[in-house]
Amino acid sequence: MNNIFEVKNLQFKYHKNQENVLKGLNFEIKEGEIFGFLGPSGAGKSTTQKIIIKILENYQGKILFKGEDLATYDNQFFEDIGVSFEMPIHFSKMTAMENMTFFQQLYQKKADIEKLMKRVGLWEDKDRMVGEYSKGMKIRLNMVRALLNQPNMLFLDEPTNGLDPTNAKILKDMIREFREAGGTVFITSHIMADIDQLCDRVAFIVNGEIKEIDSPRNLKIRYGQSVVKLEYSENNKIIEKEFPLENLGENKEFINLIKTKNIETIHSGETTLEDIFIKVTGVKLEDESQ
Image (cartoon, rainbow, N blue to C red; front, top):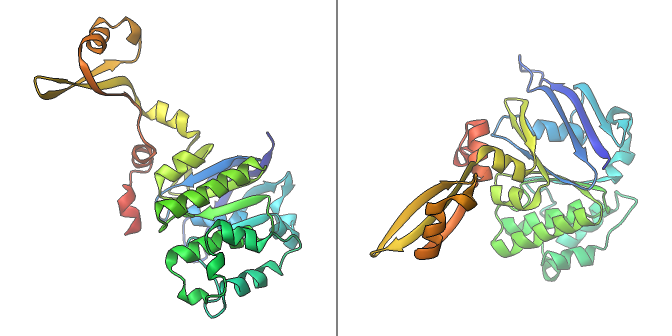
């Protein structure tokens, strides 16, 4: 699998700052993968994304896009990417259809607007002013906008934040289908369930440095416990037992409980991405919104 992006020793400092916001990032994004980029507020997530979509310049280090220096690309670069920002940006005094038609004229390749708007459930509201849209409707329209130019790569910032489960599932299905068709996705989100369900690999950035990069599965194995926990009922009480995974099939007590007791639940000591986020970053997820 080829790399679509290679980031090498990326450093960046805002003019008013004395210290670098990014302190030598090294990572790659492979073609055809969904790559999650996670970290607490102020860690450098947004700065990194703004640099690799060519909004911010004057960085140190090197970024390769499809094997070529990103700095050498002209506006043709934007034909290859689609971006959905966390805060939807539309013209509020234009209808949704007018917005999408306007933005699509900026590109050479053009997707089917009707098909996309029907997919996210907005076609019947295409002639409403965007200013009348709810937050969730604006977020769904943002996804349409990101796909207007039939991009090869998507940059998605909190793509399902504020959506009900039904509409969140529609967008997650669209992200998977985009990947299955050969597209690549860079995604940031604080909804760990989405990251776990969608991402092939995730990176954790803390204070401008990458602390972990791996698949969600490998991270959960590394940070989890190699145990099996079960609960069984006895004398109207729920009793919990924990056994090491190693040589579990030879553990006589475990086998005896399975055979003789009414087992209520049984599961491994696998941790969650939320637990891993807290361990790696030292920040609880609820603190991020403050």
